[in-house]
Length: 389
Ligand SMILES: Cc1cc2nc3c(=O)[nH]c(=O)nc-3n(C[C@H](O)[C@H](O)[C@H](O)COP(=O)(O)OP(=O)(O)OC[C@H]3O[C@@H](n4cnc5c(N)ncnc54)[C@H](O)[C@@H]3O)c2cc1C
Image 1: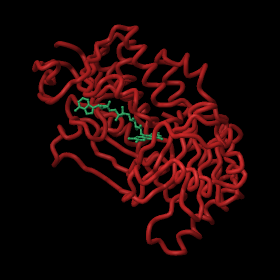
Image 2 (image 1 turned 180 degrees about the vertical axis):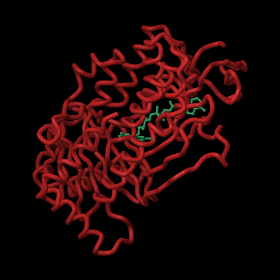
Image 3 (image 1 turned 90 degrees about the horizontal axis):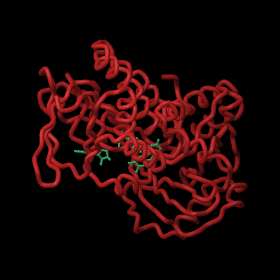
Image 4 (image 1 turned 120 degrees about the horizontal axis):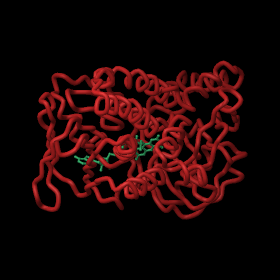
């Protein structure tokens, strides 16, 4: 064999898997379609569950996160001007860490460089074959030359639009999907946050999220119709809309400035089963997508890495394939619970086009119940900080 595990995709799940496997003495080759600069320019997730924090530390890349990340003990959910505080620390004894996906990816690339692992960029036309043979093979084009690698296992970490999931025959795949009738318009701005914790705002004008990356870099979102284009949204229009959706107390603290990134992301829930096909394991967005309302996308990718790395290490160091056989069922148990939470948060906080007046009252009642019930708060906190692996 040319290597033990070929990892398709050099995003967070592919790089973390490579990191964990190489530290266990397992050889990998990562195949990434884009340049490193492009991967590092993608502004995405920003909230790490504590399980992800511990996983990154165990993988030897926790130092910068621990120095620069912002631990958050809670978050706010709001209904108009009413702010409901969810105190993660008091309710569960745990917290989350604010540390951007871009930073995590940068740390992973630096650690891979230091270990001297192989990460090929600009890889095209990946074809995965022989998944039911004694060894799998992966063919691809890089720098104009066609190459083939043989390996024991292939890890499909190539995101929603990758090739790995589609390698599983369509008749053997079951897909579950919910597409939401709105997107999130997000901006990044070098301004101080309106509050020291995140605010998930339900308002009569639609949903908004006040998030952050560091004490002078905010990530703010507003719910927009799917038909909207980024060009429709000047910075001024964004600030005006954002300000009227967050509680007055937070709006009073709002500092505006030029956006340094602006994009619209559609919201969807998606799961493809199974996560394992012969010698192929699927991880992260290659197998599932959540709407960002519960901050679960990146964290689910990391819990997949935890399960998959355990299975691969057992198979490749002790010859025990029980973990590989059980990977799909084990990972899916946690995935479906995170799917439920993300769907529930999305339904609780967004306006749906054409909804009746009853729907708005249900959202308000859910938030009122959350304000008054410690049991409801504990349930939300337990899911938000991340279910155990
Ligand atoms: C716009 C946006 C905003 C998001 N915001 C949040 C958020 O606020 N909170 C949150 O928790 N999550 C968020 N997410 C989700 C989170 O970013 C993903 O869950 C996370 O990136 C998953 O990591 P991954 O490595 O599995 O997939 P990706 O990050 O998609 O990485 C896959 C990699 O595979 C590469 N690739 C694709 N096809 C091929 C191929 N054929 N050959 C080789 N390489 C290939 C891609 O270039 C990419 O680098 C967001 C996602 C998007 C798209």
